[in-house]
Length: 192
Image (cartoon, rainbow, N blue to C red; front, side, top):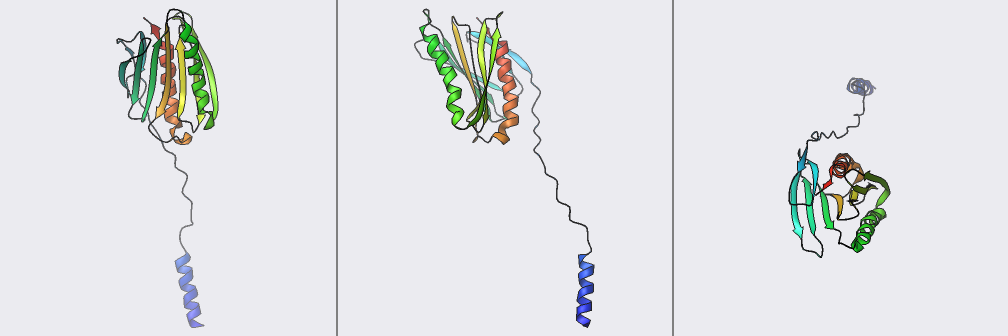
């Protein structure tokens, strides 16, 4: 009995402590640099603005039946790249329909993994820039795609890809940041 009382007293002294409080959930805070846009002047047949805070531009001429360029806008901090492809439309415009078909079918290829593809039309009659922006929701490889054209001489497509396996929740903040840059590129395009 004596041992039982000692054991009971020890139990009460040891058990007296702070109440257990579960830790609150922590969320990752991502701070991206404020956009600082600068006009790109190069051998490309169009002008546009890119975000200079965190992006690197590479361009190269592509050997093709029409004048073509590949442009990569890299964002090392976000581990993503916006890939642009420029193609000139030939004189009789027979390749315009093929370019449009390819640009409109590409977002649909991501529907296997995507939850939804949201389309947003774009039109700037002053600069003669017309196109479509596609926002891809879900675990698709590309979170955003677009095309713009003047329907006469120029056709430009663009896609956003990350250097990571797509996990929609993880890349969503970076995808939203870069989608704003893509829309700014579309809005600032002027043909030469």
